[in-house]
Amino acid sequence: MTLALAAGGVYEAFVPILEVWYWLLALLYQLTGLDLINPEYTFMYRAILVGLCVGVIAPLIGTFLVHRQLALIGDALAHTAFAGVAVGLFLNAVLELSVSPYLTAVVVAVIAALLIELISEATDAYNDVSMAIVLSTGFALGTVLISLNAGGLAVGINQYLFGNLSTVSAENAVIMLGLFSVIVATVALTRNQLLYVTFDETAAAVAGIPVAWYNRIMVMLTALVVVGAMQIMGVILVAAMLVVPVAGATQVSRSFSESLLVSIVLAELAVLLGIGISYYAGATAGGVIVLVAVGIYVLSVLAGKVRQTGAPDEARELDSISQD
Image 1 (spheres, helix red, strand yellow):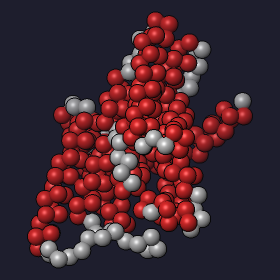
Image 2 (image 1 turned 60 degrees about the vertical axis):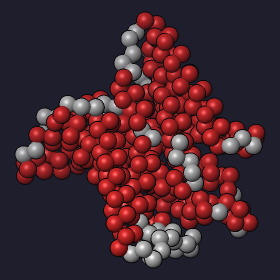
Image 3 (image 1 turned 90 degrees about the vertical axis):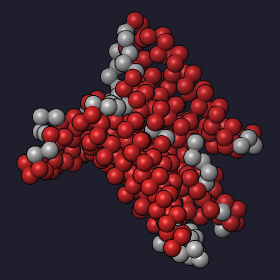
Image 4 (image 1 turned 120 degrees about the vertical axis):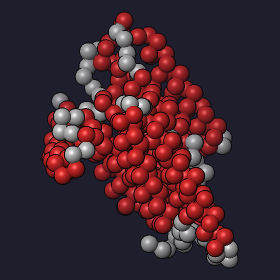
């Protein structure tokens, strides 16, 4: 009962933000007449809001992951998040609960993120080994639960595999706003420590920073990003938003901070163009967003080559840990 009341309180706290967002897009529709933001299609309002949030938090966390050579962890957690969705659907069907599958996905993905770290620490296995173990276990669990078919009920699992703009409910949008707030606030508070651990774990440990705990914070934040982005990207493509915009930004940026900002800009551009193209073309949003992001990456590579040709002696180094 207490947990339900707390969840209800959190939901009510974010509802005004959602209402303001509806009002802003309705006003924009009156000014532009874009069918994409027609007030009759409020599901698009929620999908665009979720997409914009993904465009911030995915490269925000992905920038740290790419520089730590952990780009594939998003894929591992996406598959375990799928298991979390399957758990939620199964419990709703068997126990007649009404819990959001995205909430169960958050719980399972966070547990999986911690398991990846614990397996690496306990067995001295490389990170890719622990990620492979958790990925295969999570996806296996999800497929088993789906195959049981929850007492004969058909499960529309395609929306979780490939994403779907029309299925972003008000509840899911509020969940996304909550995840967005937690991720941005955590990174803002721990940015220097995360940066230190990212580039030199040994020096960070000598300086008294609890490296293991910050590693766990990073993988848990990654899990939250994956679940949030899964709504429109789907399990199969969600990891791309953690990596592709960051990879593009590194081609044209000279510092970590600049790379972080540029990656967010590129991600937002990919999300907005991808949602727009998918809406008018009737295509799957997740796939279109990734294709646009890859196209932007290719342009970034070309832009980086042109810049290097024009200034071959110019150094491109990441800023130091002490810099803001």
